[in-house]
Length: 166
Image (tube, helix red, strand yellow):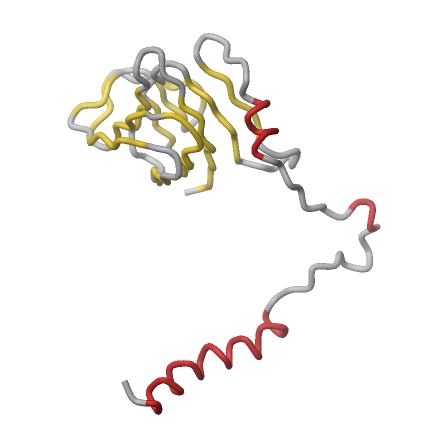
């Protein structure tokens, strides 16, 4: 690689950095919003997340990971397999925190029941694919894909579930 091609490769990135102040919105609230009512950032330490899911009832415990009422991020701990799930309008991102599990997804869901509009559970998955999940793994499940989490007997699995609209 020549010096000329190195410089030309760096130039667009440098141009972007120079223009960032003009394209990144300000982090201060608009003048008409009282500072006490402006949204605040929140840090939730790992120990707090672990405390949130310390006691499972019937093999499952979950709660919002932050105090944001609009948050769609849950911290979840499972001690047994979950039902087959299918969300018509929501994607799931799973970020594994602790333990081991197998996610079966894809294929065709049979025998599900609707629990609320766009949300289906139960039944079984036919011709799904299995994925072994370990701490640090990330799994994206698009809306409309059936999925089921399997936990080995005596096991425990903790993860963040981040929901986003289709």
